[in-house]
Image 1 (cartoon, rainbow, N blue to C red):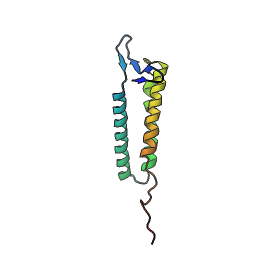
Image 2: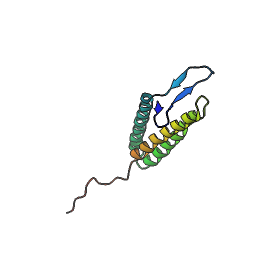
Image 3: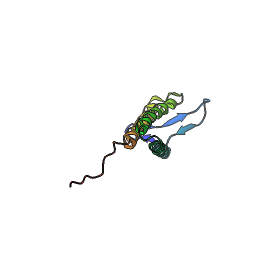
Image 4: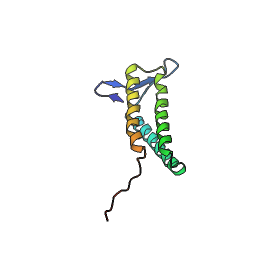
Length: 115
C-alpha cells in the first residue's frame, strides 16, 4: 500500500537477511481491520450476555490492551521508520473508530412518550 501524500509504500523485510520483501497492500489492511472488528463485536456480545454489569469496562480495557499488543510487531527489525509510523497510525485509526463505536452506551429508551 502506498501512502499517496508521502509517496511511501509499506514494505517489511523478514529475517534472515535477503528474504523477499513483503508489500502490505490495501486488501490485507481492510481484511485485518474487518476481522478485528468482528472479533471485537463477538466478544462484546458474549460479555453483554454473560456479564452485563461489567461488559463495557471489560471490553474497553481488553480493546485497549489489544491495541497496545498490536504495536509489538512494529518494533521488530525489517521496516523503516516511515513504515512503522504509518502502520502505527493505521492501528490507532482503526482503534479510534472501533472502540467508541462498539463501547456500549448507557441504555436509554429509544423514544419517550408523554402522557
